[in-house]
Length: 490
Image 1 (cartoon, rainbow, N blue to C red):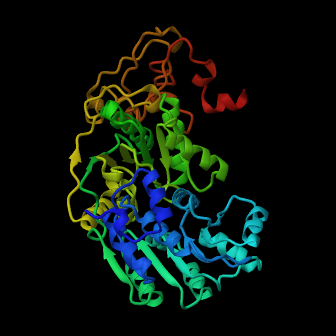
Image 2: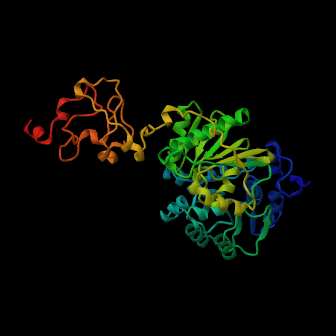
Image 3: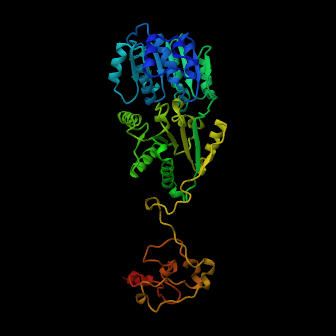
């Protein structure tokens, strides 16, 4: 087995690695670090959770250990698709460069331009940024990229999904042609392949796993779910999620729950908190300080459930996540690989469970074609559960005891007068000629159950026998029994 000491890294970097508790590199690290140290371009393809971040941070620190940065001209550039991933890369640099005098700046949204400008003006060795904020600084004349010696693109496939490819191409054009490029991705879409062919020069290709594969140490499953009624789907789906969490018991120490839409992220988080689960949302519309507090709480164990969108949680490195729940089937099959890659990291076992409604079955088929295996179907834990909770139930319509076909055969027993009818009396069937009107079409509130024909037709006739009201109790207002002309007179 290869040791970090055999990779020709800077001794001060090796010391930091040892203090961090690592001894042996992962396959992607062992494959990418040697050519990176030689100054070659690297194309790294590996599933998430395999240690790609250290694959470029360690050789970068070694190569940048000598030299000095100039004002507004960073020596290296790392591009990340999200703020959280950029902050995570910055933490890795802090961990591995603590014995090396290197300066860094983090350019992400939600932070004051003034503070970032001050760091850039002093000169930085390592600039870690999201594409949008980087171009903002460049267009304001606060940043020059002509001094970049090493450029890293992390999570390139996510850049594609988020529409950053035009920005990436522009940033490449602003950096020197002689730069060294380290390009990492979990999947290789045709558009990503085009970019690598355009901007990388004879790269060393390191592909640790088959493209778009899922780790073997992650147990997967999907519950095929169909709501009892369309208007109940959302509440019943949330109830199913709670049942799936409860079914895992103590094995579910913490979990990330993925939703496709930001509104669902908030709704699911509120629902779980309502039922006593320790949960908090994270998505792109939240304030950066709130997102940071939420992530810190999830990492240190004070928060058990993180409800997230793909953008917010892409590339997060929380080694001890026991479960991933896909509340929604991802619209892009590649996102499934990244979602479940949040669990089973650093060689640990993990479990990924998903809820699939009928309209998402095509997306599920696309996922199974991508990963080239069938995801096991799980039993619905609510299948035998009855009754449903009151807060998740809508009133069920009641059906008439007399079918429409037999309503004409039902005997007609009208009371002598409506005001004398007993409140406990049951409504009687209408005459045969009004059969179609007599069958109730929806449930009635207690104490006011009556058929359509009992109320009279639009011409003011209550029935064909002279206006007596059938099946009404003493509570019936007297004006209801009046004819149309009489009502107008009143």
